[in-house]
Image (tube, rainbow, N blue to C red; front, side, top):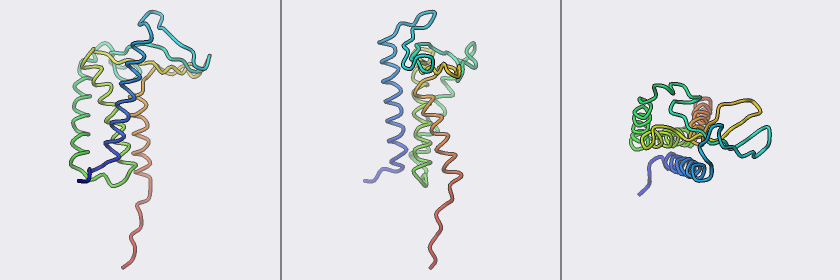
Length: 159
């Protein structure tokens, strides 16, 4: 039996596993304190900094983010249906949608279980908001879909 959209499921599984394992590691290794517990990986540039976020990306809606867990669930169910029913035509689309699913599921699991998401990737060189692996997966997934949209379809052979 051949699995439909194999790269979709591989990307979703790997992305979700990496997200949940890294969040578990952070929660077990760092203390949730004010100011946040932080470990310099590249001093002045990149740190692991343990914070939580009850909102969406960049802490948007953090005071009223209860609906985000339902949005994560709806997006996840829609993408699972897409992976099961549709024939995604190329690896770029399969990986793109799979990574977006992994991010939606990863952050959705956090929101459902604890009402907030663990963030820890901290780029201080550019003062970027702290984020997590699920956020990275969503963004890489979007890039994959953009590549798929801009890529020329293969030309059909004549005759």
